[in-house]
Length: 259
Image 1 (spheres, rainbow, N blue to C red):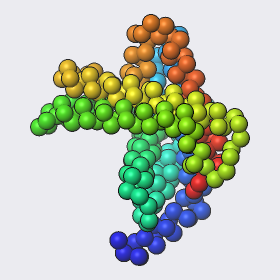
Image 2 (image 1 turned 135 degrees about the vertical axis):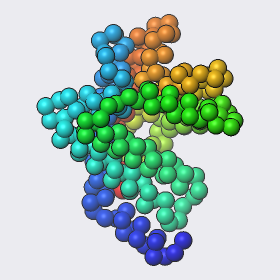
Image 3 (image 1 turned 90 degrees about the vertical axis):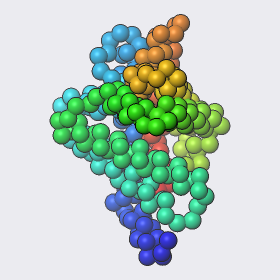
Image 4 (image 1 turned 135 degrees about the horizontal axis):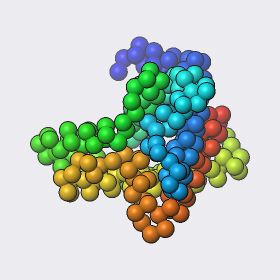
């Protein structure tokens, strides 16, 4: 890669607007996870009607008196955070770190797109989009294998989150010790988010085995599946609080992250 491109990416990553925007993006992640935790808690006790996922959370945010303004701010934050992650792809570093940066960049840009669509008056439809994507994959040669691989990767990401929470290695992402409350919120949040992601991945694997695209649901479907287990409401409540704790940690990360 030419030095000109590398220098341009470095300049973009060091741009004060991009760096400040990245911190806004982490704060936006905090808002998102607090709302998902709230929606999941409502779902656990039969009081919720919205989807307990990013689309449902953005829709909930948009329904507040200042929701439109907040949605545009969240959109900008996630977009700048995704841009900053892209700048981290260029330059020295291990391949595994670059793969992680690319994955995070895609995730944040997708979240920015979802928030933008809802801010502009579009529908949420998170679960339907997941089933549609799965159906498209299954229609391809070796489609069921592709869906199973996607599920296995998501399960792996979930396990990674759980391990990161148990070992508190997320503290390496911060420039200094954020204090006890952020650390504990991060531990509980990463574990709960990892469990939720592992369930999402499991639904993809089951959908591949049964050749049923409708079975591959996103986060909302994964959380609803907990209700089918013994003491499901209690389990979902624990996960809901864990996701909310991840939101609390994200606010701490907005301040202490290495950007």
